[in-house]
Length: 88
Image (cartoon, rainbow, N blue to C red; front, side, top):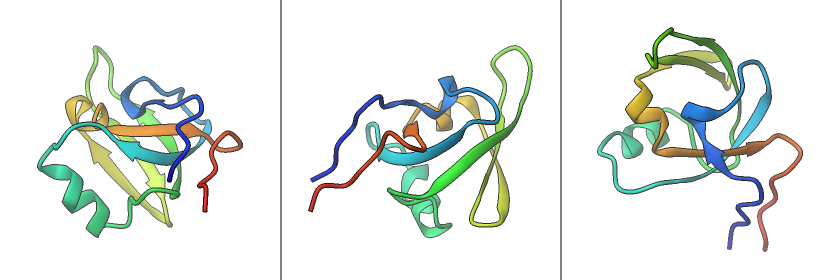
């Protein structure tokens, strides 16, 4: 079971803060592809850039950078890097 302490949408997370993927919202078709790329629950990431006016974001995780549309980023739930834990 997963704990969603302080969970927020990736789209609303602050730039440059260490984050951890703690879940997904809804059934966005891109979620399975993101998992295949390694963006799984427990993955640490950082938002490196944000486009103006509600545009996309660039995240870095597992040594790669990936651009996401804002609507895709809303489907990913993140927690602060020190605020997430998985229950056994």
